[in-house]
Length: 448
Image (cartoon, rainbow, N blue to C red; front, side):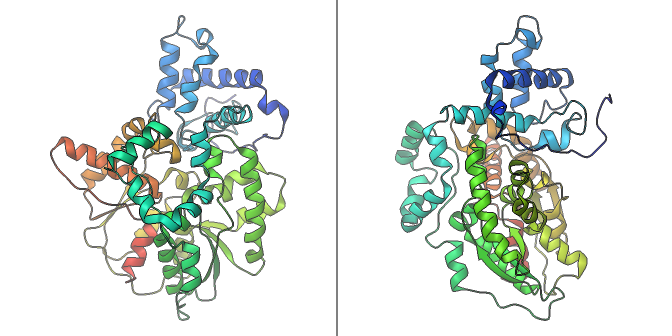
């Protein structure tokens, strides 16, 4: 047995259709096996709150070992996990192919799956994860919805915190009256037939966030692709299921995966590549879905032709070169690499893409923002998220570039809130509405 694995991390399929997966006693055995390994290693102590909570739990126990810790006390450890995957990807020396076979995030997923099966998931969690329904309901009254959810609206935000547990200090995504899919039908960018990549075709999986909350990301992506000769179409059958995965509803994720794959593969059969516009969704299509449905050939095939948008643009640049016309970004760019982009194991593609800009200084922040999707907006988690993301906010302030961008729009907003907190402590104010996606910066550089 080796002390630590030197091989690349390998993820095992999620055995969610096996009845043993939902056996509470067998889960407890696995929790204790893995927690004991974590206790003896502690390399991951500074990643998030899960590990400090676990180690404090053990250190404060009667024997100072896991044997005197009650299983009923494990819940806060699980609840603190944002499923960012950074312990698996960057820290843990005992992930597969090591004999210890340690996958902490998927262990937390199993715990949540049992809670979900037992009906122990709050109504709020379930409603927040209904992104398609929420987006469809909010779009016709986007102005009113955004007024009600904006920071500083003391009446509505206090009520939301009391009734739904959504922290009144947490920035929430805005909704748009016209979805990205609707915009795409009305406006098709002119394709540059003289570009080096002319002749390529790509179908953009819009994602629920881009479709309902930030269509500008999708518009920017289409403009950049068209400038580089790529014909694009926009498809959005439904949400990839990441919000449901967060609370363990694996069956719902599997169903969404089957339906979306069926739609996207129709375009693949016509010669189109698949581009996901948000890292969490790209991670689902490329990695999580194949682990949930390992025997589904459609899912495997889709995974092999799916790209993160920055990954796709960098691929064009490396293989044939980008179209001319990029202009420098005054003041430079600080790019935050999202955890779910890093978990795709593709390298820092957003940073690589932005370094294609002429005469533009690019700094990189490679650490978790602490947001964790819907996890970070809840009252029980928001301040923890700000604490975990404090090093990122501090780094962003110190780098002081003209533009701060993040591959994850939710992480970007969260970082800006952390920066504002730090600057308030120094009686400084630098409030921004949002941190744009890197593809928006590339589009702006092209003059869009």
